[in-house]
Length: 244
Image (cartoon, rainbow, N blue to C red):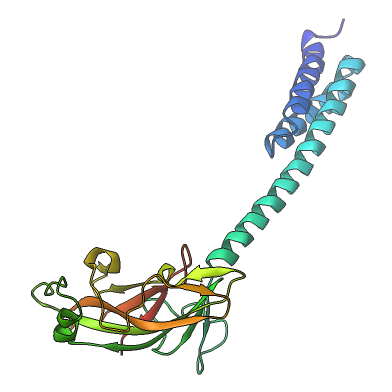
């Protein structure tokens, strides 16, 4: 009489094969369980166990394995397409001369781009035209509600151009400009609520190809060697720009 373990292996192959088919529509999991069922089925056949149970388990395991493999490949394609779509939405392109093409460090805090460089987002193009330091008098005169900067800081006026390149219309206010100090602290434009000297860029609606040029104001720490952080639209990757 054959040992009971032989029959047990065949039954195990059948059970695991059924499980592999049931979870075959799940990525990776069906591959693992299906492979186990196939191995158990082969071992059971080699040991001359219940041929019906062993062969059925082997076949079911193979079906589950193949199904899960296909689902895993399709899931990888979908995830890859989603990541590519997000990168297209958030990615920016920097047009500059004198820099090596494909330099991934260009536009970082360590390697900021120069004033006047074109920053291209998915729907907006931004150019920082100038940064003028020491503009306390001009900023305070621009609006009676503007407050004096904190001690040790001075207002700078940043002039920039926004061009909408999308299909319908956009808003110049969706481009954000902040200042990052040399120590890594962020001076957020939304936290200061300062009205810049005219012409000030606000929330002008722009149709495809239209541009707006104007000013924004930020209080920089005196003598600091920080950089501007520019986002050419919502959720886009930041690009860092030197202030001199």
